[in-house]
Length: 257
Ligand code: ADP
Image (tube, rainbow, N blue to C red; front, top):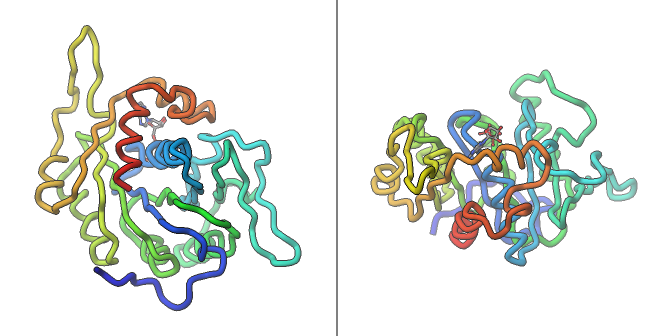
């Protein structure tokens, strides 16, 4: 098995986490945060202890997608570690809960902030930490891989944007970082109407990616107005509609991570 590339000792706050799952996409707006949050709540619904780390400093989505009572992170005055906020049993850390609004920062500062948020948080015992990665393949990905041993990556894309080359870039990046890609999620793939299934953007090249790179799982997520509105109202769809079709897709994804 591949050795992780993280350097040095594992930070104290990450020591009791069994699996760190990166949810990643090459472009913004494809549904990466939607997948990360619904995956996390699915795993929690299956009985796991789960946390979400929103690693997008420029556009943190997590604060809109969940409704924690306490919307500010607290620092333990003695240990100086950050205590995650929590919603429906899932621990949450996002720059959007740091009380500073949107940031104007240069690359190295962003890496520093992400590093600090992730590693000085006292996550406690977790079965899964789901990381909502920033879009693209850059500095922050490298930083995260250096400070935390990522167990696996899930790549999110959409059919029309599934420029084969873009997804391949993501897979190659994780492969260089010695993180296995366990699934590709092709989001906003189809919708059902009049007992027929429509693929408005064509079938995408997910199957080709999966085949070429030997990724074991491909999941198609439908276009669903409720998936979008649940993101806006702060209740993940798999929580508000646990028997729904989407919940079943996420349960299967949960089994594979
Ligand atoms: P990203 O994290 O890739 O930037 P988001 O998860 O924030 O993307 O999703 C972008 C927008 O698309 C959000 O408004 C979200 O609610 C919506 N969305 C994502 N997936 C779906 C879907 N399958 N059906 C309908 N709307 C979706």
